[in-house]
Image 1 (cartoon, one colour):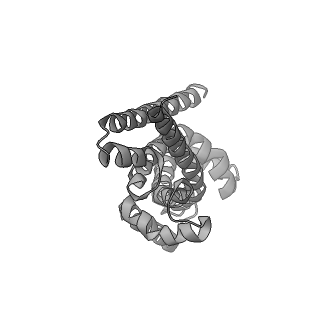
Image 2 (image 1 turned 90 degrees about the vertical axis):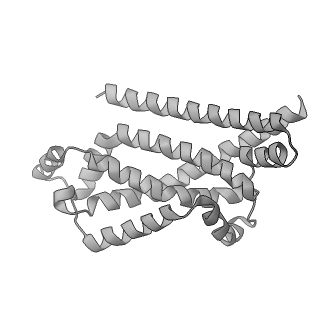
Image 3 (image 1 turned 180 degrees about the horizontal axis):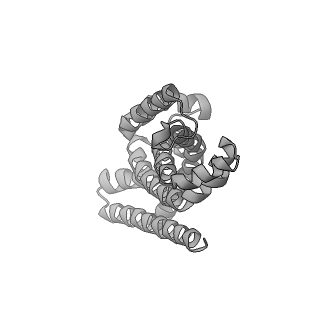
Length: 220
């Protein structure tokens, strides 16, 4: 196996690891925040447990985090990565800023998807005596699932792009390969290979997301 191929395979694996774990962690953080944003809205906007102060505070936090460019956020979170992982650079350390950067995006995706649920279905559930938690987990989330899948697909694609940017700060992965070999060592072949792999990953994620979303929609 050539050295170039080994580098590409190693960098691809690092990117997959970063994207996989940051997708999980950002969903764990963003999903409950998105649900809270949706259910605490005003009743005329579809909220089932209206709480304006909570909604405003969560909305402001999400908006502030979304406004940070990823490179700046990654720099700011280096001390946190050091405290948790023991280092501020590398694949493992990059998962933390990636997760935090994607969490507000996930939250807005969840909020938007839940807002698309037919209010008539929610009202019918209320009339049948369902609790708020039952409405959320047995009505709203199942009804919004195809939209949620599409949103999570976009999240993963964004994380692939973020992981490439992380290479500028020693985050590893395909972005690091493109910068260290393609740019700094003038290896145009490595640059092209890195870009092609990123394009392939994005296409595969999009195809898989579309397939799952269509399967869920057609099974109803």
